[in-house]
Length: 124
Image (cartoon, rainbow, N blue to C red; front, top):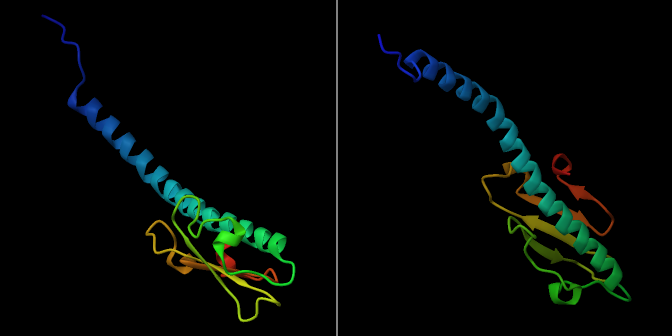
């Protein structure tokens, strides 16, 4: 009788089941990691903009990204930044917005004010 080299169907099915179990465990962790990385993109951008606003400030803050030498989009491109102020003498509000499916819906809009107030709290 000649011996055949190879895998049986049972061995292949065991491998498929093991891969399925590992994937079921790994995918949620990976998804959460991606969401956190996207939020860090916005957090970093807002903090850099706040830092540049404070360096720019002499008599007044600015709403110009050119004055701050910074882009209106985040480094990875998932968020758009906006600078608003009722009175540029007293402060500003930095806003990061996104509609990426890789970010929790509650964190699609994040803000940082000149007083250091950060919203929503769960996203920081």
